[in-house]
Length: 529
Image (tube, rainbow, N blue to C red; front, top):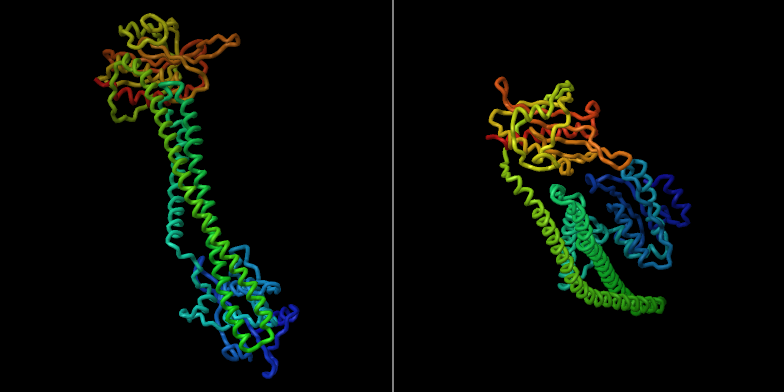
């Protein structure tokens, strides 16, 4: 039923209609009622019952009831806007900007009232009420799927599309190219990111030049490989926009051609009936024909230019992609050569060590840490075992740094009992290699530089400080020492802090101790007899 608000809105709109007029007077009355929510989730929508009452001879009967949804009202508005140039088409109610309010009772009722006013303003308009689209909207049955008119009203009509084999091949080529380029660009981005993240960080110990080269290689990958791919991804988007413009031009051409045929049929009818509107209809027909011919020329121009552009695009793409992949291959080759050079520079050091270290499963070990002060002079260890140094690091007698603590007490940081089958010479060498890797920053970054020395029984890690005059000093160090087996116990490893500032914890010591535990786990596995 028509509410009081509906009547007030219709009367205030400036349009008139007379549902209660006598049957002798022509009338057309429309009511939008009974909103119902249909569908689920994102597919849900509101349907409305549209009731038409009229005595106009062009309609099927005095009353017609159909079901319509909001998109059908939009279709009617757009069709009238296209066909009735210069006429003020009544406005539609706006869509809800907030998703959660779409199906609120208040919003549904307000939209129903606005749609009721919209369609009645059209029905009461002298020009618009004669529209075939309005008659179709008010009378076509939803179930009549065989009817072309019904399909149009329900928004089910297939859009007019160009059926050209070459055009279909072009679209398929562009969409496939877009997918391939997007995938390639994604992999290129990951590759550049890995290079920037120091993919070769494990090789830093080999050469100081590798991090610099890695950064340069990442920049070259970005400019010569990733950027060209990104550029062609953008180019494909531009081509897709041109394809959409071509499709739009084709639809406009077809719609104008169809409308021109209808105008021609209408003109023939007027000429047969010798209507006074023949002259006006002829002018409209000529104008529409000119628009149709212009639309056809525009479409043909777009097709011609696209055919030329796609050939140029494919030729240029072949050149650019070939260059990009060529530069990528050259960059990878340069990177491989740099790594090979780094290995070659490291090879003499590896040969000097003469180690072939097998990979074995690590065992969970731990160091018992304590701050107990005890006397652990290096001279004492040297007196227990007489060894020959294998690796020469700092200057000294045979590469071994002489004792300078004179048997003074040190701070015991941790101790661990070694298995009885441990090759102590090999174990000491592994300790020294671990300390050497720390001093070069291969494993962990430290706030102060480290100095490693080979001492009797193991390795010494010195914490380097720079004095005001620029001279370096080692005021505290950690001795990583192996004590041989005795009659009462097996071999023992101890970490001892010593030096002038042995009572002060040097920067980075906790990290060194955690890393030392991992090194002990590996070294014990490797140094078994």
